[in-house]
Amino acid sequence: MGDPNVALVVVTSPFEAGGDRADPALRRATEILQGAGINLIAAPKVVQDVADASEVTRGWADQKIDLLVVVHSSWVEDSLQFQLQREAEAPVLLWTLPHPETYALAAVKHFASVATRTGIAYKWGQGEVDDPEFVDTVKSYSKTAAVARRFRKARVALLTPRTAWRMFGPMDMSYDEWDLANSLGITLLHLELEELIAKAEKESNAEAQAEIDRHAHNYGQIEAADERMIFSSKVYLAAKKMIESYGLDAMAAACYPTHFGLVNLASSWMSDEGFHFDPEGDVGSAIVANAMLGLSAKPVCLAEPVLLRKDQDTLLLRHEGSAPSQLAASPSEVHVIDLGDLRGTLIEFPLRKLESMTAATIAGHGGQYSLYTGKIRSLGIPEAEWETLGRGFLADVTGPQGGAALLEGMFASGQDHHMLLQEGDQVEQLTALAALWGLDVVAIGK
Image (tube, rainbow, N blue to C red):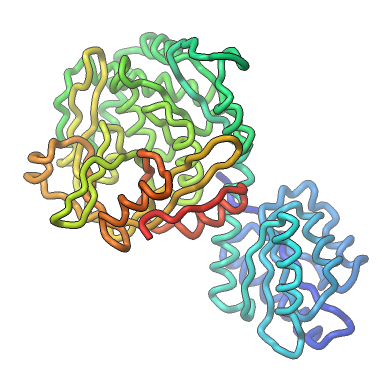
């Protein structure tokens, strides 16, 4: 994803105190934001009236603006704020300079009230434009807004065996699929799992081996049979070609149980490369993971709760083998083994100790969807203990109130069993993203 496009405007009123600060604020804000590497579309002048607003917004329609930043040096009429937002057709950062005699904060609060009631997405802040908080807020919110805009148009492929589970209505899709796609704005492509398999079988052994060699440094212990590794690598090559030919932003393959492990190695490799290939046909997880990867370059993995360790007040999360190797403490801890009766593989290792991780998932139906997100911590698992716990991709985690509270919150909120994990704290950005997508937010682990 490219850098967000940010439009900057400073507004003031000729009838209010504070106008003398407007021009310096525009110059300084432009200098600081451009210096921070932001792709900035700065107004050439301070906006005081409709004529000014019409002049500075000329050409915005072709700029694909992700975020509008409106710095207030005084009270202004809400018709001016409305005009700027309509021209930008983007979320707004309402920023007020910190001077009480100007009523700038009152103007921001007034428009925020209107925005709340009319569905205009916004954040607000106060301070001088050279305060670090100003730059940090612009960078964070513009990235979130860009993800919301661009990923609403994402193409997500669902690869499944040919089925006929319908009762009525759509012939090849379910109403739930239509509903989820319409609610989030994504385009869901139905593809045959057999297409992936057929394409994989046509890939050459030499190219498959070359990919195994290219990724070998991330996998310390390859215990899977050679023919399984070759075929899993072919699946990766075929999936990459499908991504390109269909213009995909994420994929989900329904492999369980008949094609158990078919895409695990491809999923793990792609996760390390910043693309989410869900191995269980979970379209919702693919959509959220796609957004998470837009917010942070850290890889995303899938996990689900398997054991509450009451004596330690931690929660074990596990998954059958598609996690990115970057989440291991060392490549030497990463094992690739045979899985299933056919040609599948499994990647297994204990999740390394991480003080900050983001957990997220989505659930709902009938146009009412909620984003579940929260901050968790991975405690790490010694290899000997990992062996006794049954291996697999295994994580020992806790939330702000402990493992039991984390799990109980999942039950109480209606959260499903799948969770996406990503290193770092992206909770605030995901919460803002949910607001832009029109989703309710449910806190995990509080």
